[in-house]
Amino acid sequence: MSRELHSPSEEIIAQTDIASLAQQFVLNLFNQKNDARLVFRTYRQAMEIVKMVNNLAQANGSTEMEWETAALAAWFSNAGYLFDYQNPEPKSMELAEKFFAAHHFLPERKAQIIATLRGFFNDQSLRTTEGQLLSDAVNAVYFGSAFFENSPLMRLEQELVLNRHFGKEEWEQFQLQQLLNMRFFTSHAKLTHEPIVANHILTLKERIDKRKDSIGAQGEKKFQGFKRRLSPGAQTFFRTSYRTHINLSAIADNKAHIMISVNAILISVMISVITYRNMTETNPAVLMPVVIFLVTGLSSLIFAVLAARPKVTSLINDSTPIDDAKRNLMFFGNFVSLKAERYEELLDEMFKDSDLLYGNMARDLHNLGKVLDRKYKFLSISYNIFMVGFVATVLLFLVVLFT
Image (cartoon, rainbow, N blue to C red; front, side, top):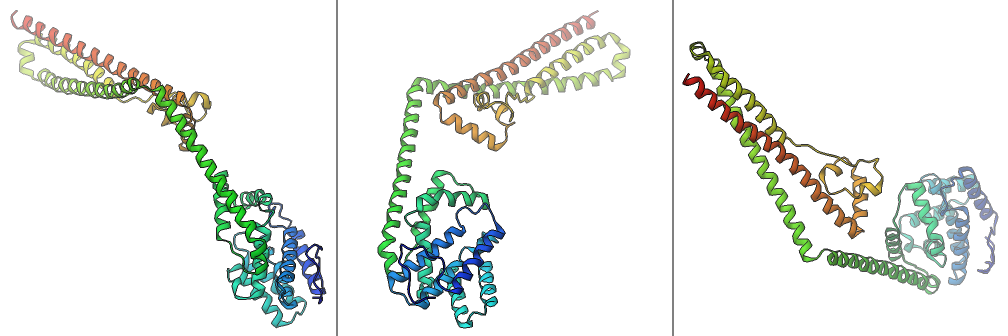
């Protein structure tokens, strides 16, 4: 490195042969890999980190060797991301080793630069001045005055490379945690860049708190609106109606089970009577009332089974337009045909609109009523057939008995 350091305002390219060679080496790497997904960790950012190392070194009065070590390590701080985004350290170390070995750099100097780079990746930068310079330079570039300008690029890079998608609030929480975990070591960085980071933390905290307050206010407003729409009388109506539907459904099922059991037993008895040869041979006419009861009992049994048989009616599926699907969510026959993700999406839509939720409850009651109507119709037919068949069987049996 030259003995004279450039001023912070000057663009720094390279000041010695080794610096120029390192710059060219890294430039070639970015050209060869050319990963368009890396929109944040770029060659330009590597240049900015080297510039920041120079600024901090000059401001803190660092020695030429300390500056040179930190600057050369800085060239390789982003290189590993070209090959392994989630674990860049091994490749960055390998590239640095390869570069310095190819140019016969002094072994002790090479070891010092490699150690600085390793300390940076392992969060052990506090141990050496060179490590502090590199760490502060990277943090100043990442989280300095251009933090909010570069934030969308950092987020996009995470989505493109890691397929990691953030919601707006989730991303702000992630950034806030990054800022809270970050620290500066050198005097100039603490005086110049630490206040900038503190303002970023304050800005993000205010944004997050404001959004929470806004969401809370909107939720309370919607909840109050729904409470106003659902008066105490309406709430009592829905509560009583649901309870009544459940009780009526249980009563219908019990009555159907009674009819199924009675008919099954009597049909078994009638079949035994028919197979009793002495009775049928002595008085064949007795078969007539038995056959009538078998026919009517079987018909009654069938309608009782139809009343108790579960039937799921589905009005919507995954291909149903969202405007139609979200209007019929509460009835179990509808939502069971949806995928879980689709069901959650529709529930979110419903909970955002109190009118839609109110309409869903009303339609659910109507659908439950239709199910009950079907049950009681079949049940009524079953009991009527049983009554008529039983009476006809008894009367015909008496006629046969006394003639």
